[in-house]
Image 1 (cartoon, rainbow, N blue to C red):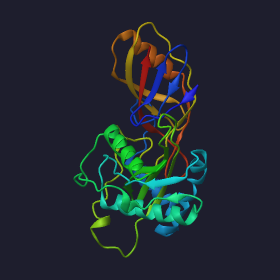
Image 2: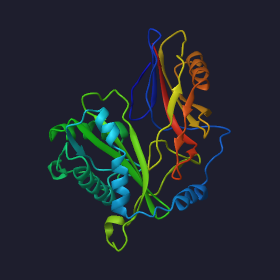
Image 3: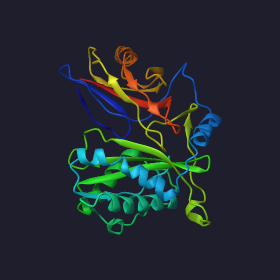
Image 4: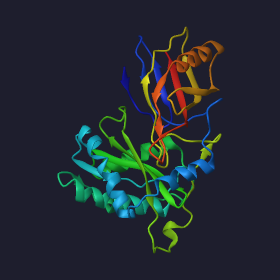
Length: 294
């Protein structure tokens, strides 16, 4: 079984008995929801003693392994986006600092100057389609000669900023892009528009989205093949619980009751390494799944 990543779904492609899966965000039924208060406590419990730059340095250090795995040579850091996919001044500021930290820590790599990236005509804070964003960013990274891009997202969490970064090898877009997440404190003594209006962490049905705003992705450790007569695409949303089980499975789209039943039966058997919250402990998250029967 090979693992691939999609910007929107865990995608299961069933063809000749081969299962391929990909990550994103979704929905659920009996899972224990982390309340907004609990998410606040996660952040307060962690209480980062680091300065903003030191916290960014520490997060960048965690990219060493995925950069090595991607055999990176020419790397560009793309603008971090808010939870709605929009661009914000704070995201650009964090991206600039990440780029500087990478230049200092990874001298063997060519970290491409972010000023070489084409200017964006997007309206600041405007929601953007996830797939459209990814295609656009891949083109931007290639246009400046990068073979690897670092992209990600952020959100405000109890006076801090949750940041998620992913290493994307442009020659192998179908493979899993490893994600690293952490909280960084908002810089002290800065009173300008850059850090005003930072978009807050968004909850869906009471759950944070996987792979967003400093919360990482659950990893499927047991994903048996789905099987059914007929072909088509079934889109579901699930909550991956703190103990790595799928729960609150909801059908978002299905071509037939038969494929719907087969998809639900398959996903019910899956097991995950759970997502990790702001306090370094497992947290229930919502993530969509797409299963393609062929």
